[in-house]
Each structure stands twice: as C-alpha cells, then as structure tokens.
Image 1 (cartoon, rainbow, N blue to C red):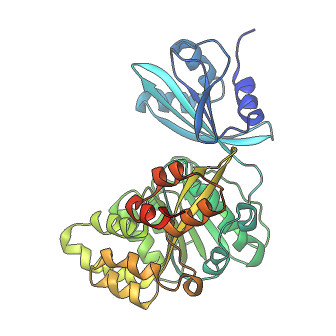
Image 2: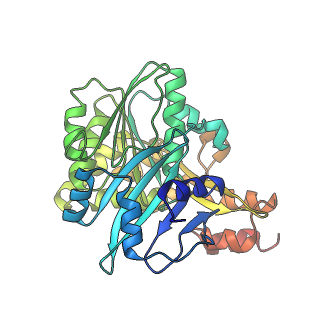
Image 3: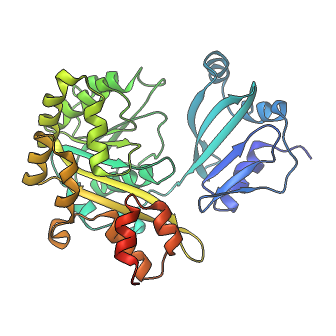
Length: 354
C-alpha cells in the first residue's frame, strides 16, 4: 500500500513527535524529545517525496517552490492539528521538514513558565524578545504570552509571521493575522502599515534585518507592546546582535532606543529530562535603570552581573542558577546541564561539590 501524507502526519501525532523529516535515500524520520528516530518504513526516493509533498499544496505554491527552490507555509490537518512546513532541495531532489503546532494554545501555567511572564505582558508599551536556537519552543512561549493578554485584556493584537503558526480564538482581544507572501510583502512593510491599523500589541515572527528592527523599535517607542524573536542564547548576545545589524554611525541611536524601549529578554532552551520528555530552561533579563544605563553606555558585558543580583526581587534569573536547581531536583543530569550551559565553567564551579 503506497504511503500518503495523511498517514505520515498521523504518525507524527501518534508518536507525540515535534517534527517529521523527508529526505531522499532515507526512511521518514521523526523528532521525539529532541532526538531523531527513523520510522520503520521503506526508504523514499526523491520522486516519492515530491509526490507526497505536492499532494497537499496548491498550484500556486508548486509554482513558487519550483521558481524559488524554497517554500514555507502552514496548514490545518483534518481539524486534528496544525503544521508548519518547509520544502527545499537537496542534491536536486525535493526534501521537506514538518513541525507540529499544538491545536490548543497553552497558557503560561500550562508551560510551567516563571510567574514574571504574567507581569511583563501587562505592559502598555515596549519590546519583549524571546530568543533561543531553532526548536527551543520560542513560538510556544510567545503563544502562551499572547494567550494571557487575550484572556485578560481588550487589545488589538497583530501578528506578522512567515508563515502564521498559532491561530488564536478571539476571547477578550481581537487578532489580525498577517502572513508574509499571502497578506503582506515583507516584515518591514507590514510593520510600517501596522501602525495605521490601530494595534495595541504586535508580534513579529522574525527580526531579520535593520529595517524590520528599526520599525519594531519605533513601534515599541510609540505606545505599542512589541514581541519578537531572535536566534540568540542570552540577553547580552541578543542586545549585541541587534546593535551590530546597524552601521556604526547609527549604533548610538539604536542603543538609546533599546535602553528606553526594551522591557525583557527571555532566552530559552529545551533540555532532555531524566526518564524522558523535555523541560524549558529560561534566562530572564528585565530592564531596570541600571541595565538601561549599561545599554546606553555600550557596557553590554556588564549586564550579566546585574542579572545575578537580587533575583528573587527583580524576577530576573540566570541560566546557570536554573540549571543548578534542575540538577538539585534530579530533573536533568550533569552531562545535559553542561552540554546546554551558556557558561559551563561557571556551572562547573557551582556544582562541583554536589
């Protein structure tokens, strides 16, 4: 019996996997708890993968893929789940990666996230950044934060994504979803016009370039709460990455804007737990007068020291302290903690007597 996409996607759901990979010369593989697992199925040819992939897209999408050799899109699957897909080519053959998007929007409590998340989403304006590597759960964290606003406040929330992932039901808030390529030409263009669409909250799926970042900073300064993502691993790295996108002559102005508009940087990673499953580890920086001053004066390297102070009172937390707690509670093992640590030397010193 020939394989079809419906069977493969149902397999992803049944295995509680996060991703499905189709690459010529290999059996289909799924990612479970961060690890790739081959399915007990025949190896696929490039022609078979093309047939599977083309069976769920439109003629326009096929044309776009064949012209651009890349295709990003999202879709609902039989009212069971939603998927984000990327089609690409490898050695001239079609390949694909599918990621499942939970149909139920998680709450902050569902994620077991720090309580400070509920406080920072109450801000009327400013920028909140959720950062981390691909597959670290950034989209899920942002969805939970928007869900908190949706359940507690009457706001107009505009999301600008490529492609749109979580679809929120309007509760107290009103959502406008804008997909790059379908509803707007680019992130920067969508942001420019978003300011004329009476938003209270703006989510930017990816802050890729200086034009988008500048528009996001302007929106945050002018009375909007802006959420964004970057592929960085810590608050200092995130701030440096934003500043470095701009030419030297513009960097002082960007530092000044960041110092007044940045509300928080949440850097996260998903770590394998002892006994199976994964847990999110968050490093949290909340901008205060001291950190604002360090950003403005280009003393980014000193921010970490500020984050270490009075964590109980400030709501800030360092990744090292969180890893230490997880080790003490036997949720993760030492090897995993050191592998994922941003500061393995600091962590080693902290845990050597444990």
